[in-house]
Length: 167
Image (cartoon, rainbow, N blue to C red; front, top):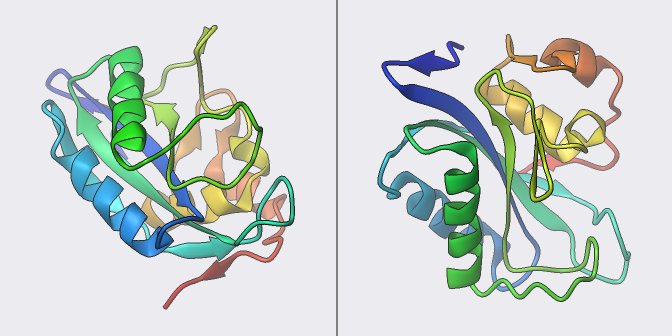
């Protein structure tokens, strides 16, 4: 997949939800992302169900990955994604890996590596998370993750850990 064309960058967004009808939350977030000015949907994975990473006393997650072509800068895109989370009822409690209506992560932004206080790209946990790698592989199997290597190699070292594609 070409990472940029005519001023646009290909970015990958991870979507996750485990509260308030997660499948609908993901669908609404997909539409909201695609409706952002300066953003066009390029590809969208199937939906996957995964056990929670953090506290186990919460529902399973529904996850997907979306590829977009964007004219927005990485920080600008991140802020827009955080706005969508808030619009869909996300409340940031400070609890790490807790239940949430919506989680949107900027996974990859072109071929760039970004390390800022509020944004790290590629996403720091990307290489170890089946719920990111497998949907990402579905839409971009030849992808080389900046600083991490070929996606196919990352998949080879990442067990499914209970991840299941929702039919």
